[in-house]
Image 1 (cartoon, helix red, strand yellow):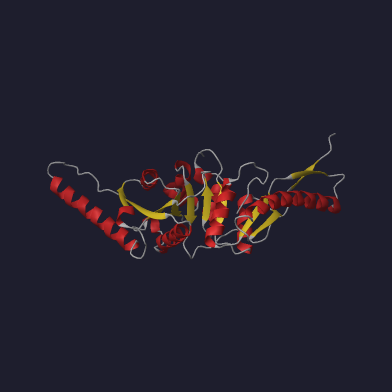
Image 2 (cartoon, one colour):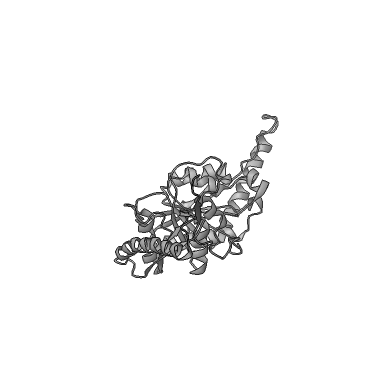
Length: 316
């Protein structure tokens, strides 16, 4: 569990992490990365003073996390704390998750909308893009009570998406739904057939083409769900844009968590294709759980960067 502000009065992401840890019988670690720089006087700077400053600030954050952990242990007994000087924050979180072999990262979603999210290096986006383990971004403060989860599938494998990603989405979604005594829904958005150039002459052909598209999408959707415990009434096949379809379906079924997959892209391919997962983060009002294909490998360096020092030069 990545704690953005250990001194905050309200910590809904921590509360939900506790719920998950208790339901799954898992160990919970509360982690905070000190990624803000601190300023040092170049004339008075020495290694011992710098080390003491870092130790003092780390101890302060450990005490804050310790108080949170003491309350958390009333509900989930296996709770530990950790604080490290490291930056940027998303890399620090991923390095810590890798060292402790975490199965899930829970983090509070930063408030507000973003412009061109795929081009901004905010912690939310980078966690989605770089994490090899599932990331739950908490947007809603209300605790889970028999939650509804919506798995966003893509059996058509658009943009060469690995087929194993849908299986991973369903595996993770099913596990959490079962642990929290919730229900799993599934949605697949398919592209509708294009309208004919001549409406009258092509009416029959267009109808047949549309039926073929719907039938093909339905077959793929049912095949993807072949081993999942998702009742027919909770299977939603929708024509249209994937982001809009998932958003509208999530609202209709009152989803508490949307489970979606992400394939990390870079360069022009990322700019032109965009990323449904990133767009969902802005348009959804519920929590978002992002998973990666099993073969995904993170490119985050293993070595921590340590404290970020900024030297203050004397005036004059």
